[in-house]
Image (cartoon, rainbow, N blue to C red; front, side, top):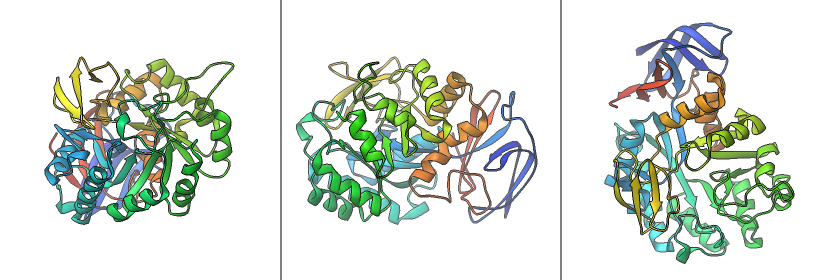
Length: 381
């Protein structure tokens, strides 16, 4: 039994001060503290629930598609240093055999549980981004491997992952996508619409039947026009929708992020990094999906200038969202942790509550990240 103290903690029942949290075997067993009415703190020493990132391709010089245990460990360590306590290892559009190798590698890591990478973020599953996307909206995904959704291939991906796929990005406008979407709704896998030409009307019709997320909202989809709105207003206003946002200031302008949070509300936004191998490594040359990527001046770009993921860490994303939207800490905790946990069906993470895993981010002095705690263990940052 250990005890963790903090001036403040953000919990599902509000912000507590003079906090003491008891931890046993990596689980929160007791929380004491006094409720306060304020939701914005000046220069706080505050515990937030550990960040959850459902869209990570890489970090620390490694990529999920490297399909090696060492690559996954490098990714987990790099992101833990930025406050991420649970992540979804994200694949990229590629040949089926390459995707299969990555899925098996992630499944092996998950089977090893906490012993796989004790000093890194926990792997909570797979985000299968592609290959079932639209060739007109590939973004940095390798267009040569884009293909029409195949239900049979989807089932093979599920088999290779041993049931560990938690999210799938798909161009939902394809008629062939519907059987996959319905399978996901029945089997608690989140469908996230991205790299897509879907219209607002098509999206609304699907959302009326079940929940859907937006893969990196605004990117790789039709933009808003006041006479042809496209899917973005629907993602921001439909009660069954949740939207990923890359809060690096490059993929989406800060004013647009402020607009999106105001429109959708903090209960319908998830901060993600969409990080690639260069995250935590600095400027240099990297690879994403077999294509060369150059990282410089805070951006990851293909040689043609296309944004190729980010080098963002979640602690920076949290700071950016807090600054750009002026949201309170309760809203920030939702957008950086709780919403993601709920969307992947996990009630044991994403919240500081009795019975949950003892995963925390400690922030001080205007939300500067000073500590990551995973399962009650402090991670060196």
